[in-house]
Length: 189
Image 1 (tube, rainbow, N blue to C red):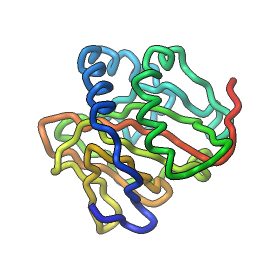
Image 2: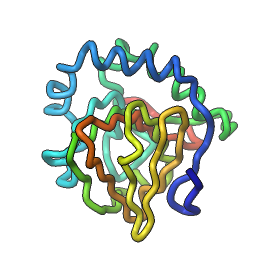
Image 3: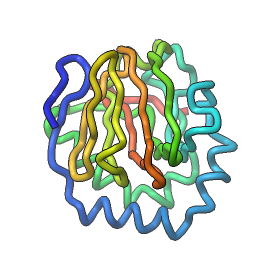
Image 4: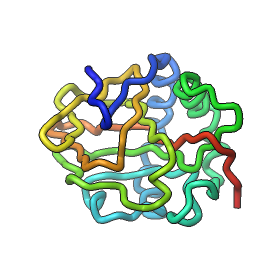
């Protein structure tokens, strides 16, 4: 995969054993997708009927990126997710960094997230990191007239402030770990 300047940047290789551990736990507890998707704070129209989320941490107010709430489910999944986050952020070298949003996102088979721009002010500041856990070469992120595949085994920074979408023409789920990262501590509510 080549980088698309201003759109997607491949950051670092991620340990596949950590990816496998998280993916195995998700498959064993697949009921969590529907349960937690119904409670998610990110109920945007672009996700309706095509994507599910399990949200662990989320901004309290989408006008700000540096105040968030951590949901109780995080305690059960932190030991599986934190090693992936730690690998992805090493390239930034921030001393007092913050994470305001952590979620698992599943794009359902034969579905598309339409082109959109993440317009909330909380999306302006952070680096939006994607770590693919399960995907297929046919699954692509769409940027205007360019498409790119985000492969398992890498972390990517995705610019969600440009028009983007995702197409999954396969019969399998596409699952990503997604989190926001920036050079400032986060306050917890």
